[in-house]
Length: 223
Image (cartoon, rainbow, N blue to C red; front, side, top):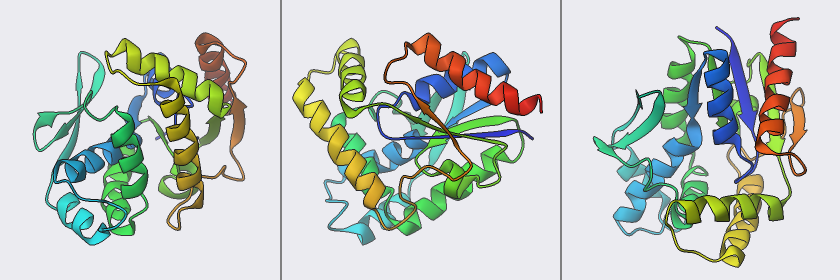
C-alpha cells in the first residue's frame, strides 16, 4: 500500500487539495481533521468546556460512533449515524477540535481508526501529525502551509459560500489561536516531519497548489 501524509496548519487547504489529489491518483482520501471535529461537536452538544473538563470529553468520545462513508465519490462523516459533514465546519467546532485533539485518550481512539483505514488501500491522509505520529512510515510526507492572512481569507470565503455568517477578523483570530494551540500542545504537536517536503502555497492558485502536491507524490512513486 502507498501512503501519503499531508500535514499543516488550519486553513492551509489540506483537505481540499488532498481530496482532489486522491481523486486524480485513484487513492482513498482520509480527512482526519473531520474526525476530531466530529468528536468536538459531540462534546459541544453536551455543553462542556473541553479544555477544562478533559475527563468528560474522553467519556463522551468513548461512547459515540464516528464513521466515514463515500457517497457519490464524496467523503461524508457521521456522528452516531447522523451526517454532520457540514455542521463540523464552524469556527467554534474548529477550536473545539484543537482542544479535543490535545487529549491523549481521544487521540489514541481516533489514531487507531485512522491506521486501520490506511492499512488496506492506497491513501492520502491529512491532518496535523500524520507524518510525525499517525503514519511515520508514509511513503510521501508533505507539510502544506500558507501565511495566516492568506489562510484566513480562504476560510472566510469558504464559510460565506456555505451561508455561514462571520467576520474576517474573527476568522483570522481563530486561525492564529489555532496555530498556537496546535503547535504548543503536549500531545503530538503540529510540526513538520524531518523528511517532509515543505509546500508553501501563499502565492499559488488552487490549481497550482494541486499540481505542486501531485508532482511531489508522483516524483516519489516513480523513484
